[in-house]
Length: 389
Image 1 (cartoon, helix red, strand yellow):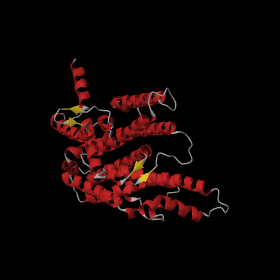
Image 2 (spheres, rainbow, N blue to C red; image 1 turned 45 degrees about the horizontal axis):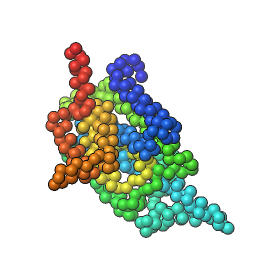
Image 3 (cartoon, one colour; image 1 turned 45 degrees about the vertical axis):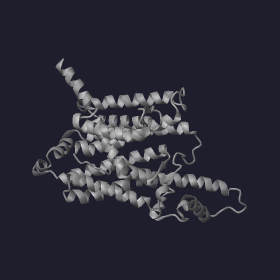
Image 4 (cartoon, rainbow, N blue to C red; image 1 turned 180 degrees about the horizontal axis):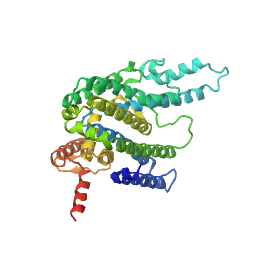
């Protein structure tokens, strides 16, 4: 990165510095490597929040910069979680099976071990055979490739069909939502090969690792922070220069950009696919920290929440997406975790566990009407005041 690039993007350096300081502070105060002031459960919450910030950045790029309101990007997030979850569950179950068979007089065959693993995993849905999609579950390398390949190919095919047909606006949003709903409904079926409504569980237990959860949670927090930092730099560089100007031009006036000779569909397809892959990487880091994934995570409401985070933070600015995702995620944890005190009104008691989503919806409406630039717009006001001085 040249000096001119860094000079033109000072917020990137500020963001990376704050991210590094945050990661260092949590490490120093963690139970694993520090004073223990920050609990392991809260470290996991912060690690998951960093992953949500990364998928929010991907959403901001496709919506805030390109003007494509995708209501399906959380589906790619979930697919990334499923791909890595298959390996985690397979290897962890294999450990349990081998431990239970180690005292047998006659050593078990590979077929017996495989059958026992399949029974352990799929017995809950009445099956004892590995579906075809689990063919590579034994290989971490292949499953990591699938983390990128499966969401990337799905986004490429869907995007090619949609953008080639020049579907735009609310119709495209409905199509992405329909894709997400179809995927979720398919995964809910027991014969989908991914345990239906039960999903994949026990993902927080890393195979072949004897370290305590306090250390594992810190490893994932470091990995999540690194992914967020790389993602921020990657998209900042991508959206700078001519490419970024064309993308913003598509958002502001697609027909004019098309008349200027640019292949608008190619730009859209590229961004849609790349942001889907980044969302999948975020999901692959998120769900081992969450410990479980099921089809409910992929339902359209999750993608709508993602759009709300970006809108509240301020779309069209990467740091705004991070602010929105972090703010809403941590506030949601506080409200729904029973930490927020109930408000007795005499005739009715407001319980935030039940009313949090209403508050979030009202906040989204208010931001849309009165603060379209979101929380990130406050920095514009401060910068404007400094210039006036």
